[in-house]
Image (cartoon, rainbow, N blue to C red; front, top):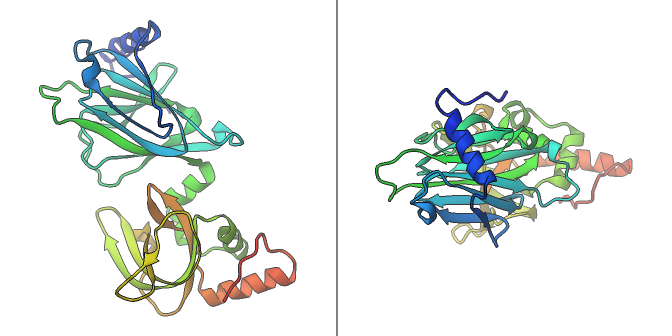
Length: 292
């Protein structure tokens, strides 16, 4: 639930918004996905508010020498998508510093990312209809080395839930879920687990996959390996899932999230062959894919 700003912050927030209403600066990026700007454009007016307008499903914000504040207006580029069914996720840059990031709606602020928070690879998500992003520079003696930045994604609430809850990527998928995943996932590959690296600090496991058949990939996650002669790639999942190296082939499916492959359904390949044949015999395949 959104809460009011702490005592002493309200005049500043109202002052910033009032100045914006009176004609604060607006920066319209020619790149509809990414924005890069500098607070030095209004160094003499430290309470200036700038508006940034982006229309893309993913991109980045990079604010050098932050002073004053930014209001970031994100708009989906998917005309068929209802905004109430969208989730916004942001992932701050590793060395992002110099500003607090708030969720703002009708003049009320909720702190999302505090300046100086060093949580590695942490992702912050909220419903699109919960408000917009209000980025306020914190008082600094020296802004010369300050850069506030983050990546953002607009995704459906169902996908966001799968990416950020333990139960979804850890539990076995039903036959129906596997067949749908084959049709809708960002990547679909047949392969084996070569190694698993557990990153305790990030609470993630990195699965090194050797690919024997590439069905589809949205990004170039899986690439030919000169050493082994086969295709290789890495997929991430939650540490709590307890993935371990093992024998046999799997059908790996999943989503791309901030440039990383995240594991979805991953049945053993022989089980996928069975469920695919059964669905095909009954005419219930949601899409066609040729199992080996």
